[in-house]
Image (cartoon, rainbow, N blue to C red; front, side, top):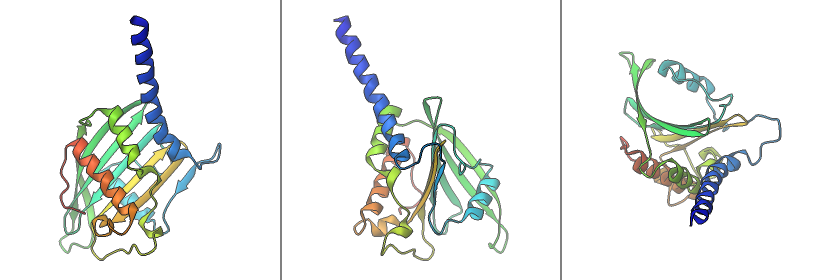
Length: 211
């Protein structure tokens, strides 16, 4: 009986490791050995991102992260608040952080001068192991930027979802404006909505607006 329990536990451990490895293996699939790869869209605005990180006092992961990190930025039209979710794996252990970023503009509203950040720890309802497995199923790791999808246009004044993924081998950045508008036309928009809905349910937060 004891031997059987040990075998079952070993199988569970193998399954858990496999789930976490699959996420990272999918991310590193095309990266050449001993190379660091950046997967950036044609319209990538590095200066805007760097300024946002500087004002919010958030370190950049564009040049890599020692283990594995996922950042999800939820930006809302006509609203001063952006929501930022950070999922970080370090030394084999996952943790999560939810941030409200309050953008501070000058009186004429044409210049951003500060970002107030309010952070709190979050833990998935189903536990980290199941949660990471569920995340893998949304295929968020392999989604392209919206700008590479023919017919997916950027509306004026659009809310949107931006995703950053970083490891020691690769950095990826992509964006989806108003995916709810395109979810019935493009599978990619439907998958990013699935991804965000899972995050919202598991991490127990509410979007400020629907996308």
